[in-house]
Length: 287
Image (cartoon, rainbow, N blue to C red):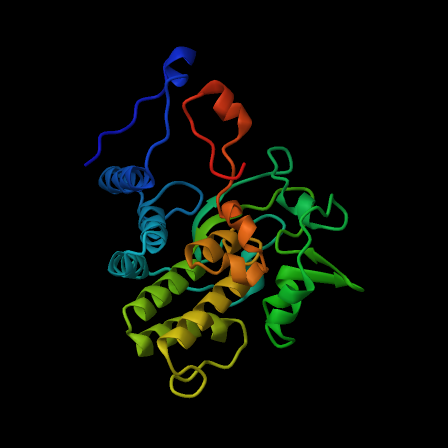
């Protein structure tokens, strides 16, 4: 196990920092999760750290590492803990953050200790992060998730999944719906297609959609992966997964229609304030 990193003790020490290879960062993340699992005493408790959260986050990390068997094993471990998809999708996104059987890890807020996520998505806030017509039309009229996720006023769209500008919603860090889709993708990557289709169909059925049939609606591994990625887009919209999903699956340039000279933007820049504090941090190419 990689030993834990020690906190920086002084500005002089911070000035000596250099970049750490991505593989080492992932090694540390997994070591932290392993240690957390060993020390955790709470099995399930959505608004505090728990064993369920550790295992769910591990499934996400393994997916991003393209460790398909590891992602499958971690997601299966979460499923064994008896989380379920809440029957009504809208119950996941209420003004106060109503408890649901799907909750794995959420961050609690109140009107005093508030978040500003809805403020950036809603017409009565800054409306700075506006969903697209393309996303709205991707749902289809029969998809129960559409009107819980997006609002429409003429040709303008707002994100209503975080329904107020008060900021008392308890935001999901990870929920069981994501774990189901992680397991589906891991199964598909391992070419276990019947199991993969059965897994993501659970999300489709909850959304009021007809389940896919392997051999009819989807006929190949590519078809199944595209169906899973579409469900990730619709199920997890406005929850912070879209851009990382496009990058990790190599689809960002084509889906967003970016020219080749903007490929450097697949990585964010290192903030200038961090480079000032630690001059040894090399900037990402192109910035």
